[in-house]
Amino acid sequence: MSLPSILKSALVALAVATSAPLFAQGTPINSAAFDSLVAQGPVADAATIASNTWASNVKKAGTLRLGGVQTSNLFSLLNEKDGKIRGFDAGLAQLLTRYILGDGGKYQFTQVTSSTREQVLINNQVDMVLATYSITPAREERISFAGPYYTSQAGVLIKPSNKAIKSYNDLAGKKTATQAGSTGPAILAQFAPKAIVQEFQTHQEALDGLRQGRVDAYVTDNTLLLNVLSLGTADAQLAGAPFGPQDQYGVGLPKGSEGVAFVNAFLKKIESDGTWAKLWTVSIGQRTGSTSVPAPPPIR
Image (tube, rainbow, N blue to C red):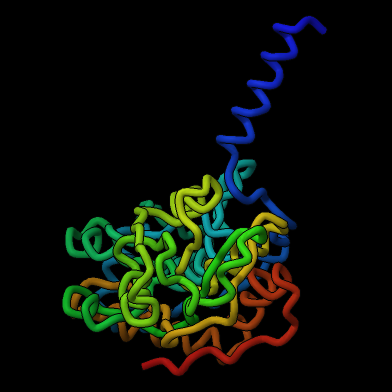
């Protein structure tokens, strides 16, 4: 191989390494088991739909307008080969779609970020948001929540080569990524007030900042970090145990919507019939090696 060819190959390899995502795809979700579980989900009867204005409007429209994400390995990940989104949040959304619209029911997907979730509900762009969406008093001033359906604390993600950070107690003076519009900035202000906080718009941008060495650590919901580790990478690790208050994930709905009561009844139904546990197992348990199904949090 000539010298120019060698240089060209090296530059191409460097470009690929530089632009590649921090974490590659790990063991994929069991798509057949996930799809089968959703296809066997319950369907509400006509009286149940008719008794709720929000559900009736969705039924009349024939489509559930969903705000979500498609880059979260455990919770909501797009499979580019078949065009389907799978994961714990995605499964809940698809089960709810089936519950309202029956066999063949469809949802219309709108991509959201931590900074846009409230606004798409306020602007009536979506019927609901299901996106590891933490329930907070500030958010409840603008929208309503059904649930919670899951809980999580915060965690710290670092590169294994970083020996200086062993927990959130070591973030003082360290460049620390978190997501704008998430609970991350408030948690850091309380538990690591001397950290040098850098807010990113998306989860992937924060991961890229860590990969590129622009930040020393990334603090966000521990479940999202488990999501990263489930990809089977040796490029990252958790620093210390989860910390901070228990984040409660809820389903975002328009302020004062009757959808809250309807979605809460749906959540109680799939928790009691075992569907919630089965969805957790196929979406999270089998991906993280955990065999102990957690108890869902009490619905408010």
